Image (cartoon, rainbow, N blue to C red; front, side):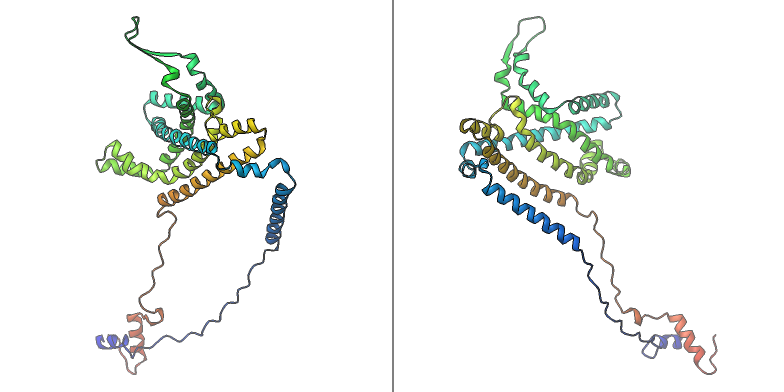
Length: 332
């Protein structure tokens, strides 16, 4: 019996019947006539708008746009705008992470302080906040250090200690931190609670758990809205004229337009630079999102069989069938 079963899986074993060769499927491509029509309409409207702006609207003054697009003052304004954006976002990210941790803290005092901060800075317009920061040197003229009820040891003038550039950064950063705190909090809550429990079981402290386990996983959720806030901050810097700080891109183009009496072409110049810098930031955001989204949504490849499926036979069943077919075959 053992020999018969061994021979059943060899060359003399019965093979499954050959299947007919399947015919190729004739796939008919689905047509979308309205999609092409809509695309043509949009293209025609865009061409008409560009033609009208180029030849029928003398108020645009394209020669002035080309003349001042790379003007030294405009380039300096774009540089200050970028500095305002970077400095404000760095401070806002640090404060936002701290506020998010305070919101999730079991300490009621820290949780209440964070809630009040978010309530105030999200409930008042950023332009109004910047106006108040501009009035700071008027409201608090000096800062003194010394023993209370005695003569001051050191006195500083607020206008010398905090120039308008620093006040603009502080105003933008404090407002943005309130929004980033909620973004970070949402990212931390998106991480499964079991990750925290597993880190504690491994003996990791709070700092190592947060920095090596929770935050790296939360970055996938935090990065996309933070990138949007970064781009939004770039455009919000145009409001620092309320401080007043006028060396940014919007302020410089406004000063030039006031001399030329040509506000429209200078606004086009500023818009081109805002679009250029925003486009670079969007490219950086794309690669940053792709880096932190590694492994998300990817599916493993289906394992291919090492042998053809038609050649695989069930040893016991085929051997027993071969034994029954033989004359006088007896199953032991």
